[in-house]
Length: 516
Image (cartoon, rainbow, N blue to C red; front, side):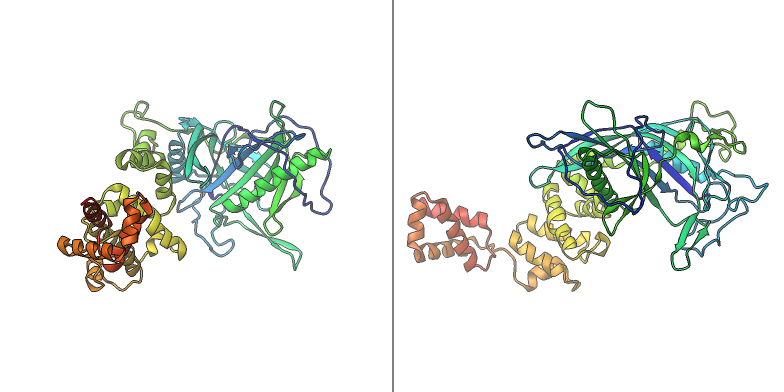
């Protein structure tokens, strides 16, 4: 109860679809009628495209889906939004409840400074306009886990508005091309969290926990479909999705359900639904309450929240008594979009590679540490980190922090490869040995297994001569202009040297002898 929660969202976007055949999954007794309501509510929703356009088959009508996400994110703080009660994961039920959390008469809310700063920082990170004056409101509704009968939120004038978030989606035949997309953020608001209902089906009772610091992220998905060029369809809201995977499945199912319902002559209810993760479908919960039912009113126990920047900060103001937007902006860490742009410009890597480096926890830091310690070109480092290193991690389901290969070890290996001390195939052998956690350095492994490239050009030249004499037919094929024959000769020489000869040097020597 009164745990600090941020809620944010945005305006609508549309995506085109061909007809999708989808079944329905209704809870027994669920209503099947509908109300025709074209007016969009004022809930905070962020639009997230989850499908690409498809060409309809002959005789089919195209559909467009509108998906809005209302995201509830718990702020990382030591105490709750409006009380001094601690926030601690997995605390015993109702062990962190103040008089205010229990809604005892005469108790008043006290705004948590840390939560306000976190909200401003979130708004800045999402390119929002920060309102220097924002207001708190009461949202009235009755539910057992809301003992006050109302929730403190920011409906009229939230702390941040009109933001945007740039993200990328994979496209192309190999999903290797990243297409940047922009989603608009409607608003970010500070909001009191309700308690948690614990349903005991065996005893047919519901228990209430007013700690409410367990869920770190919850998403409500608002979904509707319509024909392009026509008014938006009636939307449904799928509540309390707590994982990205369930969110995607719920949206996929609900879009298919609505299209199927409409194409079979039915109508869509303006209702609240839940997602059954085991059955993979959404179920009706209740008719959607209209905005007017909440009876919003100004919160009488909280004054307007006033923020300042460098130009409006009063002279001689106590830093502990005011919140400076510009000061928070200076503490903002580098944003992912900025980091990706730097990676592309500084190292000449592809945009999709920059996304991969940032999406894997710890991978960017690993990459940067390798770059600092090696003489190898950034392109080669990028290839080894994203292909070889990341491939080994995924194969064994390990995090970057669990890797047996350190950045220093990989940097030393790349130096050996860059100086042509070892070949590419030998480098992969060395990496495989490093992965065995035997504590040996790349140089030790190269020395023990005699993986160094042959440096004696005379000996290698003699070996090339012997291979050519032993395979006259292949030599004849080379002289006839067969490029595969050249590769075969190179392979035969490398086999004779146990892959310790540089293929480039072998090719140069063979071409020299063949031209004589």
